Length: 312
Ligand code: PSU
Ligand code: MN
Image: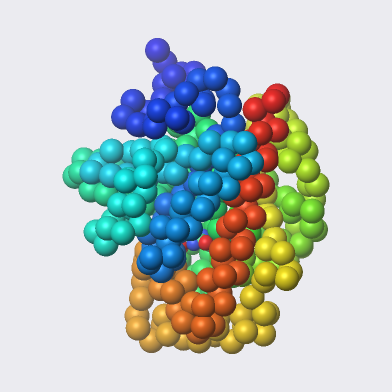
């Protein structure tokens, strides 16, 4: 068969039984990324968080589908043992979408970033995805050309991503401009400010505000009705103000983390995990709590959106 959705089906994707059954019967499913687990959070907290996030999706009436690659096998929906491996096995790599064929062919194991997760989830037929903060344009872009592969992949993938904005280590206005150029829809959830990951407000506005999960599902339906290009819908869900990182602490930690990154000559895929880890140290763990509060809120909202979407 040529063209049509079948041509884009991924024959090697392995869905867990639970995810496969939920999709077949039209029940709500939420994709979760695994890089935050393997490389974004310290052990052993990371495994607890991974399990807690899956439980939160279930509490909201949806099925969690954590995505990862184990021994070259792209998995959508992990067993308890598989989730443990992603959290605890130090040889688990960080896989962007460009790395997927390399991991597949070499039998490597890796956690999937937003870009790799969005790609595999969309190929599996999932439409809703929750993460912490997206990757984006780094502050030193002029020298390094470091822009996360997340943006470009989201520009050509039909998936709704619930996030607390982009990581605040990034150049947020430049990232928003790139999303505009790439034609990716962005809305604030209950806010006209773009969220700032560890902090409630990034300092940049958004053009659109959505107020309910049902309204988000309406936008998703409109994307389909309009036969809009296959791009994502980004739903920026701010961390509650009471749980944000103190903005003054944030500013100080950010300056220290960026200086350390430059001094230690960190580049490429290692930059984001380095900065996130450094933030935890610089803030005595307060950034971790804010990060987790943001992710928790995103996962719950994503599940509610998936429930609304499944009722269409
Ligand atoms: N959000 C978090 N923690 C993380 C990430 C996002 O709260 O660790 C990960 C995501 O997987 C995102 C990746 O796709 O960081 C971006 O990495 P890079 O900047 O190298 O593209
Ligand atoms: Mn990068």
